Amino acid sequence: MTTPMLQLQNLKKIFSRNGQAGFIAVDGVSFDMAQGECVGLIGESGSGKSTVANMIARLLNPDEGRIILDSADVTRAGVRAVCRKVQMVFQSPQESFDPRRTLGDGVGESLLNAGKSAAEAREEVARLLEAVGLPPDFAGRYPHEVSGGQCQRAAIARALAIRPKLLLCDEATSALDVTVQAEIVALLSRLIRGRGMACLFICHDVALAQDFCDRLLVMHRGKIVEEGPPDEIVQSPKQEYTKLLIDSVL
Amino acid sequence: MPASEPTIREAVIRGSSGKTRLYVFGALAALLIVGAIFAESLCPCDPYLQNLDAALQQPSAAHIFGTDRYGRDMLSRVVAGSRVSIFSTFLLVAIITTLGTAIGVFCGWARGQADHLLMRVSDLCLAFPGLVFALAVAGVLGGGLHNAILALAAVSWPKYARIARSQTLAVRETTYLKAARLAGCSTSRLILKHILPNIAGPILVTAMLDVGTMMMELAGLSFLGLGAKPPTPEWGSMMSETRGLLQTVPWAVFAPGLAIFAAVMVFNLLGDAVRDYMDPKMRGR
Image (tube, rainbow over all chains, first blue to last red; front, side, top):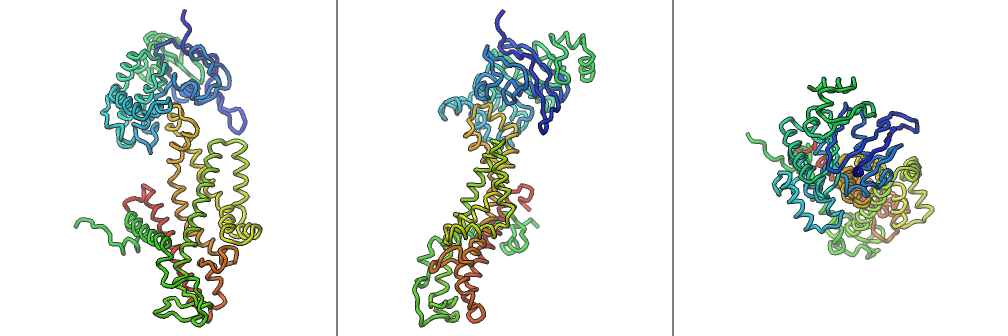
């Protein structure tokens, strides 16, 4: 059996306030992801899904447990150590771009940081924008000048720029209206499968995750309560919470 | 009837258009600055030339603001004094803005012990009445314009540090900063390209509003003999030199006084206009 690309072992995160132990956001989460696998992480708001993603991207430090990426322990690594392998698409597209910089600046930033010249980055940005279905002149636009869907396309282009092995989609379609949502999901699906990337798809929409993912993880109060193929989970959920979650959507 | 652009008079008096006010006061401030740059060529007489025969003359065609007790032309001294007064104020504001912003961004970014320590130091500076503390600092350092600037800088930076720190704390939690970190930005790039441009607005506006205040305080220190030294023409020290003559030769006090009044007002109103213009909710009103 091949070693998984990502392993989370007993990950725990407690948000403390004024030095006092407070809210347990993530409580002993463990799962593996294989190369190119698309895993859906579903659950209600506040169940700890985004905290897991932030810990994998190294934007947050776990209090316990280990994160192993490509056979290397990155539990204490900095963002810059993992950012070439892990990228993220955020929930609110407009807020994920610096309001004082153009979309092109945002998309090309990781390329510049990786040592490409400005000219190379500009060319690559144009190619990336084309790949996500945006005209090249969008590189010169500011986030407030484009729609949410267009901005999310640019955010996907930004996440793909550095050719990561793992894409974390943190509620990437939740802030968009239904028709745009479908377009973005189709785009993500095409790009992820086309490039052989693994994807952790975080959302609270069970139907969407069922269509999109190879495997589903159901999270409730910081714990993974159920895991399995999407159809099996949706059609015959074993846990009471999963039934509630599915009933509330379908 | 289509809405027309307000006249300058309307704009100044009623403040009806942010943009017009910005242009009017911007132009006036630019006039003062250009005047200060070319002060030497604009002076009708040599501001240092003494003529004891013509001492304490009333305003006349030859000397519009009259002469002081050494017979020096007051208009020339007011014009020449604009350079010292305006540019030392700019230098002071530049120092406190840069220093305060640097400390504030560092505290907001690093947090922890260094932040606590620096913020307590800034609290200490804020706890004293500014000018009194500046007097004490200038007293310890000795007189002179350089020391007056240092004294005022020592008490005025915390305001900027506070603003920069709170803004930095807000920006560092934004999603776009997370995205920038994920793009592999170094700390210096995060600060220079993402934090500073996004916190510059309020700092710039505070600096604009502070130009007037700092001009007053610098003139105040000079008036008390802790700033510019005679015979250097500086508005505060000129008022101080002639204050004993207020009842007999009032024009010698009024000339630099009016200059301070006019310059402070122009820079204050420009600061107001910039603040209103930068506030999107006020724009277009």
